Image (cartoon, rainbow, N blue to C red; front, side, top):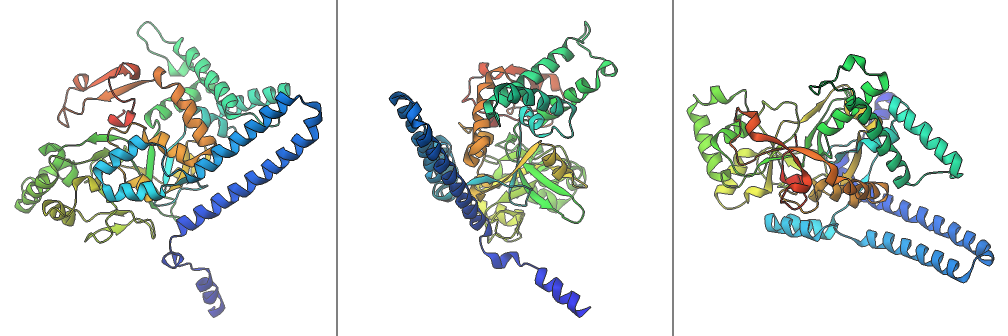
Length: 446
């Protein structure tokens, strides 16, 4: 038994003793990528030398130029500290210290599993089908189409633009067939749908509800498989009405009880004094929206705050100290982010969502998670994808090409929270008709 206890001690890892292990892992990841690319370039060079005698001078020049350009692009990505100077300027106007941290050391890269302090990023439906060929009827159908194309072209692997385009076509074809089944009133009898069509409709609606979400993982229990995430890019409001202040401070379930409590009314007055004119409130997800909002920030010494994961330097809680600090002028209101609701996962549901290709786990610098999503010229989803590079960066570019075809339900943020007439606050609009800076982060997307 003593030996078993010794073995357990040997297996225990004190995360604090590892220091900034996230940056250490990032360095290893970048080194591995550089080594792999170096081998690929050596192989390409050898192949080029063998075939050079059969090529014209112009062909050799073209290939050499292409290879050089590819290396230059990758090397420039290694040194790039951001992907949007406009986003940087906005961050600097909100939080100079965080902006300095961002511009001198921002980073993000893919990881295999979700981790607290990291992100999970919603993938487009095209990618979801491409990855999920083992468990999805439509995914398997796409794989067969792509396998046939590979055989016809003699290619070992297809470029991302090729499989993305075929996946997009498949989605449009199937959704078109479903739409044609609608009656005169626009209703579709779901019982008449084929199994593939039923799955396609379900996947499509689920993807629309979580379109381009960037979520911060704030809780994860390996024993029970439970997880919680907060959606970073669904802003609700940037100023507080009294009703919204009550929702943020007390939650929907406690408002009536707290209204009768003198101390609670005093807390509300103090909170409104600190955050009324400038308060970043986000819809953190569809679950637990009746609870008080979760406050996220990067202030290490804030009394009452708890680090969400050792070494992440991302904290939650400490509201009383935050209110006092803002009123005293020690902190800016935009150093804090308030999230109403969350995504709550049970029984490893988040891991299943990753396995099915719905979400991509991403490790990132804390400045990416802490920055506000207020009128970003480059939406946070595209920013994170470009920071990751590789296929995710290419996927971001492909998604940008179809933005003009998308439609959104947009909530008018100027209306008071809790308005009863939904028909007055929600409308369907074409993004191309909006007089804004092409940024979905300006609006709460339903």
